[in-house]
Length: 175
Ligand code: S3P
Image (cartoon, rainbow, N blue to C red; front, side, top):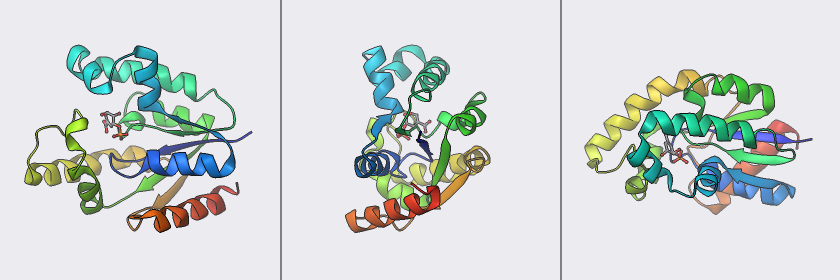
């Protein structure tokens, strides 16, 4: 039985890599944000604005406990998922957890285009975005660093590099 959970900051490519890895291995892929949106019939951004972040985190934890029971799956989490409650310890019990690590400047480049879809980044100027990513990543790394595996994906910027990342992950996890 295989169960892999990808964690890391927003814009690290968790969904892209997770989907590609699952396809290559013939496993089911779950993105936790999409799973939440399906189960609650609301966008994550709507849950944030209507119910507040604290309630989003409770829902996120409950949904994590559902998907992390599934077998033969690749799961990508939200950037904040490992950083609340005992979520990272629970993930480590349930799965092979991989931290997709990237430097703030790489994350910034990835996030610039899509920042308005993300409630925590919405409306920030370019300067504010860099400062926010740098500061929040510095805080969150204590949780991300608890993952059993870490893969630096700072160089993963095109499809060829995604393929390299998938190969590295497969070697690392022997899958
Ligand atoms: C969040 C990351 C988002 C989503 C929510 C909060 C965070 O997921 O769960 O907007 O706290 O970092 P992605 O990392 O997939 O963007």
